[in-house]
Image 1: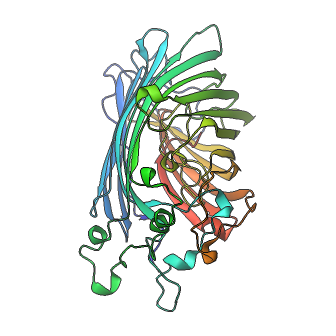
Image 2 (image 1 turned 30 degrees about the vertical axis):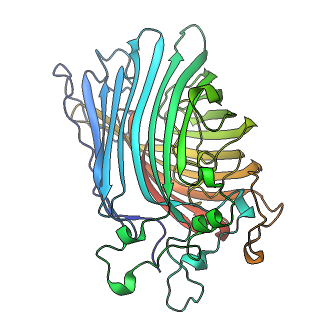
Amino acid sequence: MKHRYPFYFVFLCISIVFANSNSRAQSTDTIQPKSEKKIKGWSFGAVPAIAYDSDIGFKYGGIVNFYDYGDGSTYPDYRHSIYLEWSRTTKGSGINQIAYDSKSLIKGIRLTGDLSYFIEQALDFYGFNGYEAAYNHTFEDDNPVNSLYKSRMFYRMDRRMLRFSLDFQSMNKKSKLQWLAGYSVFNNTIADVDINQLNKGRDEADKLPAVDTNTSLFSKYKAWGVIPRDQQEGGTQQFMKIGLVYDTRDNEPNPMNGIWSEAILMVSPGFLGNKFSYTQLAVTHRHYFTLKPKILNLACRVSWQGKIQGKMPYYMLPLLYSSNKPARDGLGGAKTLRGILRNRIVGEGMLYGNAELRWKFWRTSLFKQNFYMALCGFTDMGLVTHKFKFNTSNIPDSYKIVEDEERLHLSYGAGLHLVLNSNFIVSFDYGRSANIQDGESGFYINLNFLY
């Protein structure tokens, strides 16, 4: 059997250079320090990662995040952040991303921008409405004794996404309530998995079966008319968004106390040239509780996102929106429900929540930089609240959708976090699903805490 998610063999190093020349050397202390040294000027963190997936090949590349702390008076808040990611796989998948975040470029305004191009040759696709779309792992289990095997790509499709976003948020120091406004565009190109590309260099016995209406759920949905013909190849969608953000956090990367609540309205009108016109609302509340000052805290998040009018194309359903990051992922996987298959839970309305206990167990100052490590235990959950309606008349009886079977999807796990200067955070999370219909488990290496 081939694994459904990558096994990561990571050679992790955090590179620290270019602290301001006026900074003084700092002592090393594995106990909680009385105060951390203020960081000045530019610094950066880098994560070179090596990964392998038997179906998409060997992954190579890296992530670099530059921070400008100015004269240090605002530390741990930075003045400017520039995030760069570039990665490739030997089978042709890749990430190209540049993101910018600044509270200083425009007085009284926080500016966040992102330009990214994602190549995903084997993106998860399990159908719609959560448990109504049954997941049968035997279809992708290539064990020789499994007579039901179809393809390791049965629950996959090919997606190329070009994403641009530009957001503005007020920074009124006299109020915790701020406004948010922005613009985003997503161009999605959708196709069947390119089996010929993925089979390059394989032994004959290990080659993937050709993808057709017998070996791909995505192909079946197209053939049955579940996915309308005018949506099958994807398309471009533009948004205007407005919202309110209420923020009392004491620290953005890992708050010890405070709340962070927001309501964002995403409007995709026809006059922008959109083929599909609709409106969505995303409401999120995050609450942080101090259990032991500077050491132990509890972080909770609950969020609902739903369509309130119009018609949505299927390829925009999974994307989840928030004020601090542009949408890319759906419900399930590294960014939402760890241990549950990516994009497993897809509908026009989705509710999800997380609870995470975070323990900062080690601190030190080294090379004129501040470090700490944290452990966490978590539980994640979600479900579809508003179903995506589609044509079922051509679906064979053996694939009929189970009616009214959606219920809570649950996972749990633990994580380790390595933190530089309170802002550059490398996270290792392992989650397990509570129901085999949502997969078995997942191991993730990312930047930042989940929320």
